Image (cartoon, helix red, strand yellow):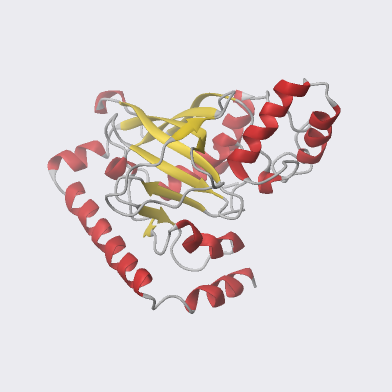
Length: 282
């Protein structure tokens, strides 16, 4: 039913000029990536592991979410959460972007799998990467609101196609209704001899926000930062802060967590187990 609603809302706009142009650009982007991958250097990069840093950020504009920039637009500036919420992971350059998100980034952060849309964006040219075809995520109807008119299939693009050097980065938009924004930056590209071809959560800090912004006075990362600021102003024993934590504990990603939601909490082994479960397909 959700997929039908999404399809009905999108189809009316599919023939608009911006949609047609976006499809052409997405096809050209995928072709360029495949061509680069086919040479000797591209093939070698796919055999090397990459260490990435994923960090929640607030974008420095007046809206709760920026649109993905058009080609040649200046990059939108962002600031890390305070206190920071981040994870470092290691992944094979030969993994697809879909595998990176579903099996590593989302469970490592603390988001629920298969709950909302997750779109990766190359901020240099505005290219977006995500699920192609019909999905059950109703927040997909918000794609065009954020300047996303077409995505390159995440199953067709490798990590090494986009994240193969320390000057490379991507933006991750999670939940297109609430919008939680992350940066994914390359910390190190390991030599092939030191690469395992696996996926691993290395470390992290800070709690993942509650799904659907439950307990927050607003939406997305900006509302989460305001919640963290509340803890500083009022103290962790303050009544407003405690009520917000109680409400956030009802969110899908915290309803079964012992002790409920606590923004200071990061359990490395718990997140590693979530990654292992995602890799195992459970």
